[in-house]
Amino acid sequence: MKKIILQGIQFDNKSSYLQGPKKAPPIIREVLHCGSANLYAENGISIDTPLIEDKGNFDIEAYFDIEQITKKHLEEDSRIVTLGGDHSITYPILKAYHQHYPLIDILHIDAHADLYDNFEGDPYSHACPFARIMEQRLAARLVQVGIRTLNTHQEEQAKKFGVEIHQMKNLDLSTIPDFKNPLYISLDLDGIDPAFAPGVSHHEPGGLTSRQVLSIIQNLNCEIIGADIVEYNPDRDVQQMTAFLAAKLLKEILGKMLE
Ligand code: MN
Ligand code: MN
Image (cartoon, rainbow, N blue to C red; front, side, top):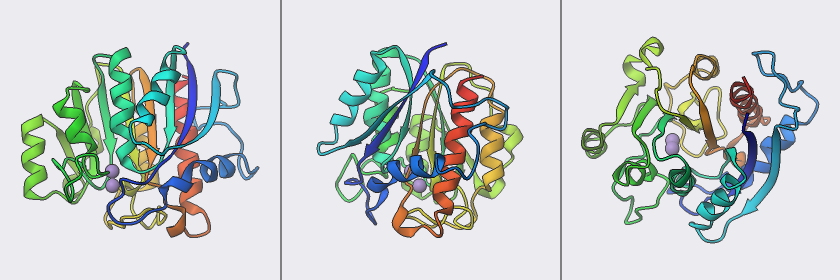
């Protein structure tokens, strides 16, 4: 089994509304190891294993340094789980992945489709990563779950790129497909309802429950080659409840990858 590298990417320069996600990675780690819970995922697998190597946090100045850091870690023949950071980090991460995995599918959980051609003039905004990923063909298939903010432009973009969107308004988790290619999971915490995850920059009511996201992860039946958990904004959190949720989701993704 390939080892798993954990990397923290401290970067929120591409956030369109509030800053804060840059502070997330050390807080999620701290909560994971605070002694409140054990390190077993619900599938009975412990993430306290030498198969997981934590490379610590990287304070990013230049956006495309994220690609270089990820590339270096992929060269260790590993799978990578990244703690963000705002969602803009997924594009440079997947650029690095493309050199090692030419054919991957993406499961993207989010309130937002993040498909803007550019946002307020910036093509690398956290509102744009999946437009860049799809136009450069870094993914064979993009499946989005939890979306509840589609506008005309992003609907057109989704059509153009063949994005499969499972919107909140008529969500049926049983219709989420099986993935054939190696899978990358991109988890924007604002996909979850702000009642469960208040510590995000963009509160968008009417979202997924914690349990629904856990079920989506637990029901995956394919090779997972990487993941990110993004958009945790500690400045907006209440009693660290979103940090605890991020830590739980991290544990479940790692536990799934270790199956
Ligand atoms: Mn997002
Ligand atoms: Mn979002």
